[in-house]
Image (spheres, one colour):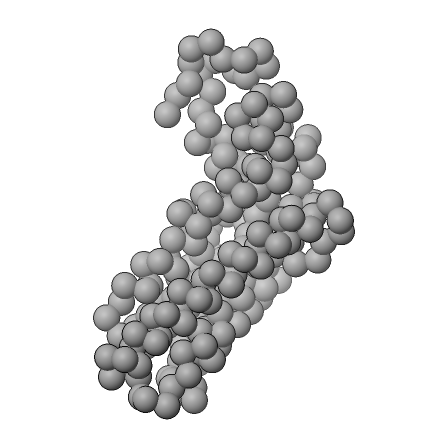
Length: 202
């Protein structure tokens, strides 16, 4: 959506908030919360600091909005995976999506939700807490879906939905770390396939 009427001083005419947020997301994804300076962000977004604050709030608020965009964009595979008809297909789609998202051409390697702020000083604590909550929410959604699979008889009665959810998230997070370290899509897909050979791992 283009905003062209009476733009505040410093914001270019035709300022595209969606495009600016996309660019900010890429900076946070590549550099992490604390590694991304305001200069890096405003330069990538093509706006002044004053315009950034007016359109998105402070750096922390911009980060939260960028994380929402990441969830709806590159990480949308997670929500789609939950709609698969069986628990095994959920886990398969989730890990395949993780491999694809963390090795996407034209994007930073790894996962914004994993690497965005694993270690943080005081200035990054809010971002770190936001990412912990983001990852916990993802695990909770998987746990709920796997509990549904137990209730429907798709998983055996003794299956532990919390353990299965933590297992899938741990493999997914490891895929992201390996991708950031240079592992290829093919190598990571082999890891995802191996992780599901004995599904469910109980």
